[in-house]
Length: 241
Image (spheres, one colour):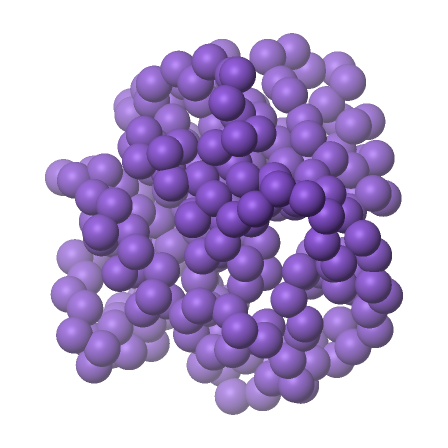
């Protein structure tokens, strides 16, 4: 059994009930130190999709200091912050591109609250829960398939992929099928409500991960509605069976 860090009380009471009604069985995992767990899995390559300003990247650099890290961030101002943090680090490569299921250019909705930026248009549900995300501007960015972006890179096993792309998860998976198929751990933000137009919900991501040979292992954290306390999103963890 793999141990991961889970917000067990809220997860069991709220998310667990919802997943059970959806016909998904969840095995709850006792509290374990995340750093120890990841170190035990001997992660040698980390792929950070939606790296934003690099905070997540810096955290994981401390957990697995010898891992090779690849970061992808399309928003120019966030990428500049990522560059500042990356310049002092070795064994790291950053890409100023979005990831999806084709290569070219695409229009992005750059939110004035940066972390809510997405290729997809934001929904009223999102704005109702987070009013400070109501303002966006459109911006053209470069987009690539993950498999093509990493075609000439050496990916040492074991691989951990983190995805935080605000509703564009299915397109990232489709364009990176070969890379995802090599991964041992995937941490991906999943939603239980439509926060972006046309986004896949948890059940769809769960099904796709199952088809690719991964099993659902819990959550690293839940994001609750500011209106009624319901779980809107979570950082779902999937591990290779």
